[in-house]
Length: 358
Image (cartoon, rainbow, N blue to C red; front, side, top):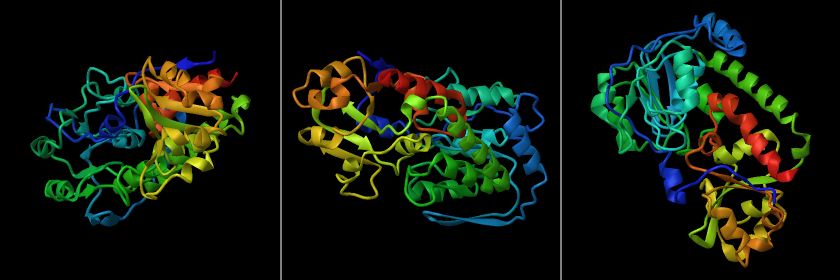
């Protein structure tokens, strides 16, 4: 049986809440600085950073977003990032944030961040990043204590009242249109624009797109396949959820070249929702043409759906073409991509998917 069981997961609501990290205590981090002289920066990033060094961005600049617009009067040096992935965007530009959000999902390190984020901090010369203790909401005192010139959070679910309060501390960049819909490309480019390095961000995005394409080419067995990321709970199989392509996780699969099942999209009644919840009665009809099912779950998930009277009729389940992601493993976090996690975990992700189709 071709099952690649990778980790466990909590309830679907917890998966959403896991992204909603706020901000926290000031641990005395060094100031956010341009670290482009670090000898550990990858070649592609070196070229982008060199290009960015000669880039001339005139300040002030104005950035529009969901709550209006933010004026950034001068090039920021001290950068705070909040919520999921945004630290990775700033780090990819060769800059060290003076404060970042704590992470509560995936293989969180002792410092409270993800391995690829910690590795990049170290590569840029920062051994002790300032990680806010913000899992229960933004710690405004700690953020103010980091003395930021700007607060960057284009991938977030920041509320208007939070935006207003953060804006009293420093110019704040929340999501542009809809909460939690900002793709990894948009995350990087919007962060880069906010710190005066938009052209550099665009170069890194182009290099990353090339990396995805070249990596995917090493897996010819996956060409033309359809795939979807789901949440299927072994504890309640009366319904399940599928992430839509407006969500960065499903969009990432499309980036790799996987086809998204049209029958899933047909079930979406709220066109702004990042997922669609489907009754198990429609599982066979909705997922019958799907080549690969990827789901958050635990060690009970596959056995539960394999033995279920309805789910067992889905060809992908019957044939073992299911990848289960564990909430403590790298892929449960990396499936929601950042420019750093893509480089760190794309091969592992494709290995896991390939294992169930060979």
